[in-house]
Image (cartoon, rainbow, N blue to C red; front, side):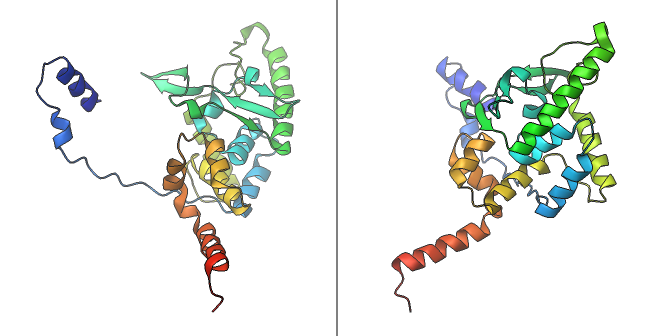
Length: 238
């Protein structure tokens, strides 16, 4: 933000040079998130069965969507017959208010194929939501969002985290942030041999290097297989 302001000052001849360009930015240490092992991910899904937000946790683990993207999903962007959903907006807290915002990057807008389990969970949730709509009647606020409170308002991300933590505790699993679901999805995709380029598209990263930088620590086996492939292609067999 400061760099942008000073660049504008330079263009308007209010300042001779951009002083930010002369500074050394602080080194950012990226916190490494350890994904859930496959067996623990399955335990979480089993623990979520029958929960009102079972579909939310299913989507998170199967598709690796960001929390804001999940809470910003609209039924208009979900096609259960075709088994697809489109990410077009995210729920974010701005100045203390929950608002829907379009993605900053074009790549974040994406259409994804739903696994059969996720489609089934969404169908069940849609039926449950219809029942809640009848029960609440005129008191319900129609937002068009997929995941809402029982009266139709957006779900506060803090409440999702609270429910997630309780889910882990009930399943006797270690305490984790909700963001671990995204890393877990990537880890499972890698384990199943899905190409990095496809994973990039699923995650909504604008460039492949972002996926590699953030999730590179999850690819040791892939690197080993690449080395072995090159040995087969170019090695002497000695």
